Image 1 (cartoon, each protein chain N blue to C red):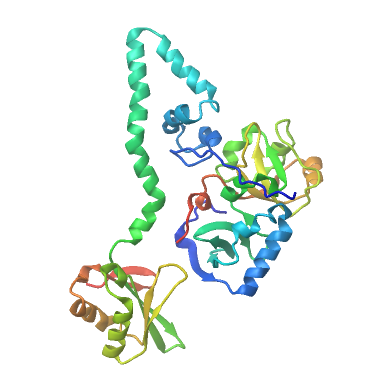
Image 2 (image 1 turned 120 degrees about the vertical axis):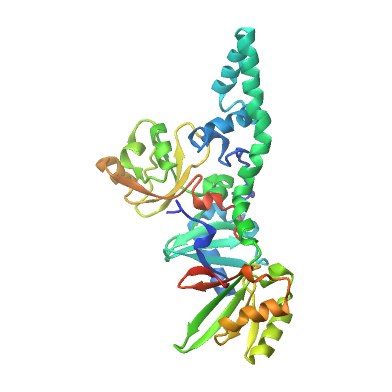
Length: 190
Length: 181
């Protein structure tokens, strides 16, 4: 094998995301059908035949057949969007503007308070960490994850003063958007 | 395994240091000789290699936010189905009959009779505890990635119970996670 093997292009169903040939085992074959008829007629000859048969019957049936045929395909375009958003839906949930405060204990009696989500309010994290450090007279740093999940770590337990400080310093951040994490549960600060 | 897998289960992701990166590359290259030529494209030396740690001792190898491989504890690296679809020749293949497809796609382990029936194909060379691609009767692409519990010969002779553990299948959590960020 001296040549570079080319990646095989696989036809994925536009509706359910599976390879087209597996649509019949997918979550919703009925919804995939119009897409399949258009994009992969050779995979499911049965479907195309069914459609033709419907066309061939008496006028009344034909009308209903066509409306049936166009109905789902016409509505499949808007339907596709929510389906497509689903994988992105999770990210959208996370983009919800909220500040999450969590206290992490280390060495039994020392703790670190982490602040997540301030950047969603258009706050510059480096500025914020400086202000926090100054206010609480402790070390505060921006911790960068490998992805874009930056957070601020502040040394010491400042969980209760911090809400007031945040709302005072950045009026854009409503008090209702601040949450604590206590015992793994999200608790609103107010 | 990935039945209810979501991005929430990623407990931490790190950009791994160069030596670990080399090790991962090496073990993938050893495992899948067919990938050798494209490995540079898949895991570019320049771009950072991220390993996402998840629950149950699961690791995902992520490049440019796309999960490419996964392994459990120190087990062998296995490609994700999207990657396997692109390079179908890299893994040994077992084929199940048509009746088994819907169960496999629901996450069931692969039972021996599904592999030994007329619709199934057994690669005699497959030993126990090896990752394999699960193909299906009359289908072109793989529908799952499995980890054999017994060798192909045993599957044939015993013909009962679980032959291959289902690791990753179409439309499971990992399949739906096209990008990880």
